[in-house]
Amino acid sequence: MRQKKDWDNAFTATELHGTVDQSPAYAGALSFMRRKYSRDLAGVDVAVTGIPLDTATTNRPGARFGPRAIRAASSIMCWERPWPWDFDPLERLAVIDYGDCEFDFGIPDSVTPAIQAHIAAILQKGAASLVLGGDHYVTYPVLKAHAEHHGQLSLIHFDAHSDTWPDNTRRVDHGTMFYHAVKEGIVDDTRSVQIGLRTTNDDTLGFNILDARRVHADGPSAIAAEIKRIVGNRKAYLTFDIDCLDPSYAPGTGTPVCGGLTSFQALEIIRGLAGINLVGMDLVEVAPAYDVGEITALAGAQLAAEFLCLYASKPAS
Image (cartoon, rainbow, N blue to C red; front, side, top):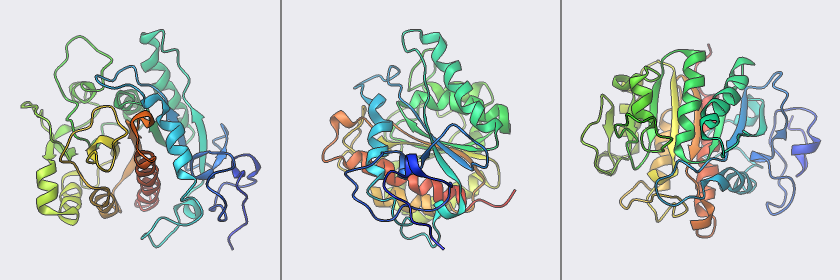
């Protein structure tokens, strides 16, 4: 039986499962989906955590405010299970809001290891992480922690950009981190897939690319089926740059590119991935200063909630 929870469930929760009864979205403690704020990982399936970094962006900064905006937007949807899923992920999964990763942006060399250690602490306790960015560079140290814990991964990467531009200088850059992830063996590019790309990078490494034109031509169901074929039953990490969506659906981001996915296409592809062996996930590059009516933050929150459904649908280990 569903237990009544109030709109300050982030502070008052006595147990970790269950949605919050319908309450005003404009008030109360704004944890993600009104989950309990906690650093206690005992019995936790998924820890939602923010990484408010945007010093690696190459265009407009502001994604450091993304985790806060996504949490606020999630308050409008936390009272019911995500449609059209036939189960509530918050009933299946014990989910907490773990707060944000702390680092000193003024000491750049310390940022990557601080993020990696933050995620490693979650994984070592048996929980998965759902990361709210932050610019896309944050995925690199997050992936390093996951690869140390799980071994080499398949990457499911939604983006307007490949983020695989060659780099021999070890830049802290949100456009080069997957180049390093491949070169270091963190991800297997031949069993990984990039969806929605629409910028030029002739060196694709070994990634399988389902660009924006193919998504529009083939439709969500075919794209989801192809992703599942490529990844198979391998352990997979899902990363979603909000600029994968067309700027008409997600204007609040640092490097918008025209011709992208609709929110419906993206959501339907995610839903079509039910059953994949997902081990971690992130939603990055929401920059609320450039948003219109908070629609980018809302898209980010909706996608992150769908990731919980996807994680809850994974096969039993």
